Image (cartoon, helix red, strand yellow):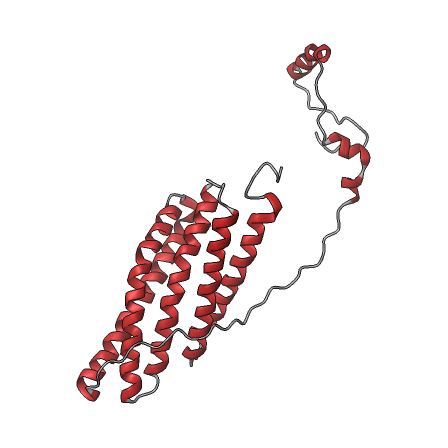
Length: 249
């Protein structure tokens, strides 16, 4: 079965999901960080750089390992990773600006302006990618709630960046009157998550039973048996097991 489905062969799709799970675990760390009473924006910027890099790697894996797939699920994964990578690039830049906002002096004020302007530009590029992913998800009625949440989070992030940019711009224009410098370079990535090896799962003895193994191997139907098989298919009674260990009914 796995060999007949290219995306599942050699554990391709599960391997990709492992990488995505680690990226989403780091996202939860960021979510906890921004909801704290006092947020460490410098730390959040580093974590966001790591998340962006993880999604970039996920996109690379999806492109290499799922190249034969035309399924809706595989396409969603690619669109999801393509959207999340630049999203967290923008968020990392925003967090750098927010860290500068906490230091109430002229140098950090104008640096915050530069960082937040860059974050705003990056967010404009994320918009079309978010819409593509949202459009793909909207085709599934069961994903309606997820689409609404996705759109709300994206819009809220954009509003926060715009709000904070207006605040520091007004502060500089009315208090400091300093020229705007270049935005800060991308900070170093930091990860607070790591993979955990799951315990090995033992295989049931049932699958090592010789008779059961034979049950799962269909035998070729010879011409002399064709008439008998057709007669059996006409019977309405349930199929009986073919051996004492058979669990197929």
